[in-house]
Image 1 (tube, rainbow, N blue to C red):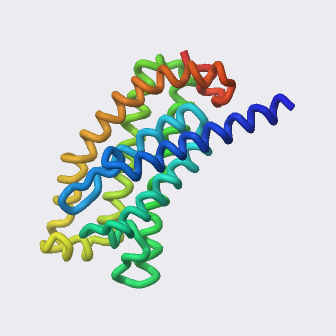
Image 2: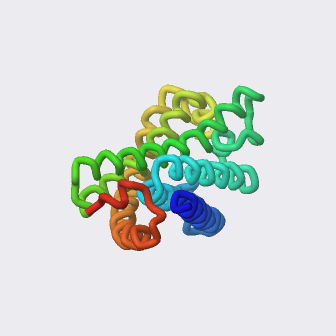
Length: 218
């Protein structure tokens, strides 16, 4: 019965975090429109959820984020929406599958990586003040690197066409995006995961909804 109560609290907590992601994804704070791509803060609750509830929850929340991204790029397309929505594919079914990987698969990796990294850092007894921002920064960079790296590997020609440049220039543009957008996003994630995580860890401890990594965190 105790295990069942814990599972129920875990599921309710995941559902609440998913609701936050959906709300964020449908407000200007969640998907910030840049000239050819949408910058995001939606990965932050994915990372926090992975810290509080574990890698499985992180994967579920990452999938929710990815589906929201897919819908956003379908309903309000940009020049790069072909890389995030299978419905905007310019190369048929192969392109649609690639877009699914970028929009959903890469976002699942955020939660998995953040969840396991947090468990590792708590096992080596790293203080929360250090472990939380590290997890936030790395989780955010997983989002940027996997998404932009996948675009380079899978959609280099289409990216070049969208930017009206030669394919040889795509690598430099991708790295420019990682530097100009990805690093500031990661720094913001580190700060917010620290600020919110310290409070929420205590809340989840009292609720008994967190994973062992939360219970062991100092």
